[in-house]
Structure formats: structure tokens, C-alpha cells
Image (cartoon, rainbow over all chains, first blue to last red; front, top):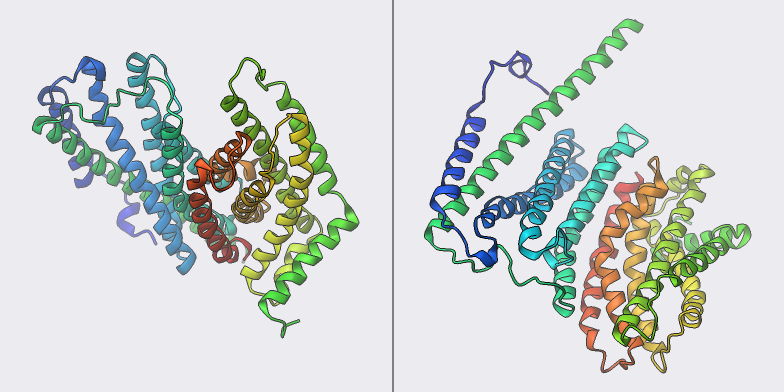
Length: 242
Length: 233
């Protein structure tokens, strides 16, 4: 249930989590652009810095979907609405980060590989991941019955996540058997990662994690408020009929 | 009925589905027709045997075969739940005193029967249309098909029951099932292509994919049986 403090108009500005998130983003940006050294031309030179956003986005996407998985199980076991809300929120945010992976990848790839897209193992499994959770969101919006949405979505949240390692491994193996195109350069493999680069990377990862937590907290708040509004409307309607 | 064991109830339910289908004949026959038309359309995309090398042609042929089975199969799975839903029989079915996982197994079995009949017609048909030569490897192909079907039917049955409770169910089922079935599809493709290229069962270079198929089948048959309860509450 939403508490009174959540319903009071907030003072403008960020809470502690938001402040921490954006501070760490600023710090990470500084490290990524001024401390990490430029990579080799074969890796894209300055463009290789996109990897400091691309890889953390992928890790956060996987984190989100792991949360969807656990929250879905919790929802099926307890029936408590907050788990359903958590699963829904994490799925939405996970899709945002997965989309970022699918956008930053091709931006780097076009100049370096000469092509926007390639069916390499990583891109392909990320696309499958994206489609899996897009399906999850479509299911949520297309369910005929409010009462069943949570249950059905939870099933997809569980099955989808169980499939992630199998898909990842299959696609990778398929690609090793049938190599294609100029996949030699990859922004994440041994591109002279020294201490400055690793620092920048972990700073970026921290920033993304805090951003994720902040976005999740915002989304959960919105969800709780929506539930509260709905409850009040029902109560009002019931009161009117008396 | 309540005293009957899990297996008996499951078989009885599956037999019921098959009996309905044999009387109505409105799923299997159109499914075969649809599969044939898909094969037709794909034929125009087949590379010339002379210009492409054997490996390419083998993969494309294997691809055509499995794409056809996949699409026709998904439509068929959607239909088996449509039958229940249309008659309002889904609610009656839930009143039967049977474990939900038995319901899953029975639905999966009847879906499996449909797919097997489909493949029994489709595989020789595509072999004819696309002129591929399996030599003595038909037995190996049957083994591949059996494992692929298990995974396909497990995911398809679970998601079909799920999609039946939504709007746009004909779109949602493929949208949900196809990404989930990627490992099965790749494995099917690899194994079939190798067989088409003349590998015998023992010398199957792609036989590692059997491992993926078995892992997939175990995970998703179990998940389906456990989660069907949540889908049909």
C-alpha cells in the first residue's frame, strides 16, 4: 500500500539515490573520455569508447531480466502484487538497456566492420533476448483479463530467462561453426585494457547500476501510485452505489 | 475417473483431443495444405544447385524444411486451444479432477501427434520437391525429428495455452515461441544439413547438437509441466 508520504507532492529535485546515480555518471564520463586511453585504429580509435556504455548496458540488461525471473517466481508462489509490479518494472527497464546495446553496437560496427549489422554470436543472442522481452511486454498489454495478466507474464518471465543461457550458447556455437564476415575486431576483446581503462569501465558499470536502481525505484513508485489510484476509484464507485 | 492414475488420465485426455480432431478434421488437413503452400513459396528462394556449393544448398534445404514445420506447427498448436476456447470447454476442462501437469502432457501429446503426422507427409514431400537425398539416413533423421519435436511441442503447448487467453493470439504465439525456440531450430538445422550432406549417424559431425536438444527438452518439458498450472488457473 502506498504510504501518505509517497502521495505528498515531492519537492523538486532528486532523492539520494538519484543524486548518487547522476554523480557517478558524471564521474564515469570524466574517466571514460579523459582517463581511458584511445584504442587502436583497428578497434575504432576514439569510437571504441562506446564500449564503456555498450558492455555495462548489456550487464544491466541481464541483471534486469534476472530480476524479472526471480520476481515472477515470487509472484507465482505468493500472489502478492508487488512482485508482479517488480517484474513488470524490471522488464521495461531491461528492454531499454537492451535497446541501448542494440543501438550502440551498430554505431560502433558501421565504421569498424563496414556494416551496421552482422549476425555474429553476441548481436544475434542480444536480438533474441530483446525479442523475448518485447514479447513479454506485448503479452502484458494484450491479455484479455486484468486478473490473469500477472500470472501469464510470470510464466513468460520464467521461461524466457531459462532460455537465455541455452540461446546464448547455441548461437555462439553456431557462429563458431560458421564464421562470417570481418568479425576480427571486437570492442571487448584484449584492446590493450590497462589500469586506466579498467577503472573507467568499472566506474561506468557502477554508474549504470546506480542509474538502473534509480530508474527502478521511480518506476515502482509510479506503479504503486497507479495501484493506489485504481483502489480509490473502486472505493469511490462503491461509495456512490450505496 | 478420479481413481485412475496420472498416466491413464493423461492418455484419456489426449485421446479425447484426437477423437475431436478426427471428427472435425479442421486442423490437420488445413495445416498440411498451409505447409505445402509455405514450401511452394520458399521454393522460389532456393539457390541454383549449380551455382551454390553443396553445403549451402544443404543448409537452405534444411532451413526450408524446418521453417515450414515450425510455422505450420505453431498454427496447429494455436488451433488446438482455439477449439477449447470457442466451445467454452476450457472451463469445463479445468473442472476435471486431474493434475494440471497431466493436462499439459495430454495437450502436448496430441500436439505431438499432429506434428508427427505433419512431418510424415512433409518430409518426404519436401525431399521430393527440393530433390534432396538422404540415402540411408532416414533413421537418423527420425531421431533428430523426435528430439526436435519434444522441445517444439513443450514450448508450443505452454505458450499456446497462454496465448489463447489474450487478444491477438495468432500473433502472440509465434512472437513468444519463435525466440524461445531458436536453440531447437539451430540444432535441427545443423543436424539435418549434415545428414543431407551424407553424414551417417555415427559420423555425424554436428552430433554435439544432440546435447543441446536433450538439455532443451529436459528443461522445457519440466518447465511446461510445472508452469501449466499457472497458465490455466
